[in-house]
Image 1: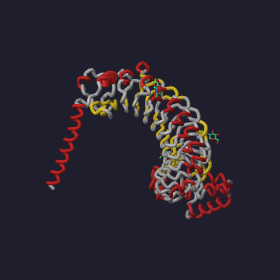
Image 2: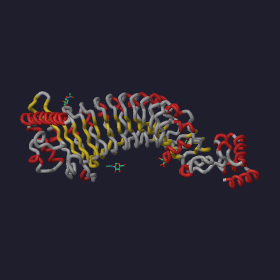
Image 3: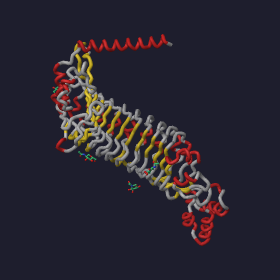
Image 4: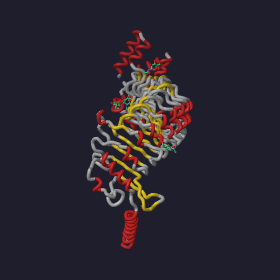
Length: 478
Ligand SMILES: *[C@@H]1O[C@H](CO)[C@@H](O)[C@H](O)[C@H]1NC(C)=O
Ligand SMILES: *[C@@H]1O[C@H](CO)[C@@H](O)[C@H](O)[C@H]1NC(C)=O
Ligand SMILES: *[C@@H]1O[C@H](CO)[C@@H](O)[C@H](O)[C@H]1NC(C)=O
Ligand SMILES: *[C@@H]1O[C@H](CO)[C@@H](O)[C@H](O)[C@H]1NC(C)=O
């Protein structure tokens, strides 16, 4: 025991010495070129505004480091360092930037080896007078930038410069949560190496340029929370590497183009809160890897798109709330979706009964069917109703009812449906059972509504004095 502990601490010490020696050697030999050091001092003065910074960090890559700066040895010259990563954010400075901070190109252009530039929460004053724009000349074809992340800067406004397309090495472009306005420059399509494009939470308008289809390496596209209008361009279908597409909270209209069905790698598709109309293209049934399909709050206006969703076997979350869907909830459609955990069909115009088969989905933990026109007795098994608890929402369906003796009192109350007039399976009182049989046997409409019927329906359907008497009996029976 003692021997092995000694061994471990010996190893530990050896590793520590090795690291220190390497770092020491590098510090002793490698230097940041004077031009880059001066550029760093200028960037710090522009953004941080601490006049003592150069005195505190005379050798910012080695002996006097600053957490937001990273340097690397030049690959061709072991005595030269390069500034490769510059990051400002609440994790390295509070506040991350001084009031009135600015992005001046001369300083940043003095750091030609930067691979990552990130500014988080830097330009926070969104008063017009304090607005900062991205200078177009900041981006040139000699840049090494691979990641440009400018996030949560409400004071960063104006257009997205088209010159960003000169950053040929760019893999990540994230301009989320700023105040950018105007259109998405079509030139961005030239960023052939781009893997992630995030322009979410800005004030972008205009249409999605079809040039975006040329970003052959794109795997994440997020344009959500803007005011982008027009139709989804068919060229989106060229983004064969796309795994995540979020276009939610915009003003996209027209139909989803059939080409979307070519996005075979897609795992997450969010088109919610737009103005998209139905029907969905049949080709979407080919999105075999899709796990999240969110379409809520679009005027789709069709029946439940059974042919599409029924084929998406990997689906975990399906959002079809507020899609103006009509007709019944199809019985077999969801049977193949063995991974489904959440299904939202609320705020539609769905009618007919709740298919009990939904309860057979082994992972379903959230089911929202509220605010539709569903009817009949809720025939979901008690175990299912108990397991979901309040994550089962069927409220706001005037024609639904709970069978007598079904579910505990607590469940029955939050289900929000009144007791059915007739107990399911004819186990209720003699008169109730009889009336149920009579009604079911006499009209097709009653059969549609299921086994349980509410008092006012019985009145409406049969009418006449005899019926009123019957209802009186039923009321007493309850
Ligand atoms: C880079 O930009 C300069 C000036 O804008 C231009 O003259 C040059 O041809 C460009 N180089 C490449 C490889 O595009
Ligand atoms: C951007 O849009 C948001 C939400 O629509 C709005 O509150 C904000 O004032 C807009 N900002 C600018 C700079 O236009
Ligand atoms: C829903 O669809 C109907 C036609 O089926 C249409 O008249 C109505 O305007 C639509 N409602 C919405 C909110 O889109
Ligand atoms: C179900 O949907 C309705 C209407 O959209 C919503 O108000 C309710 O909060 C949802 N229920 C649950 C449990 O999420």
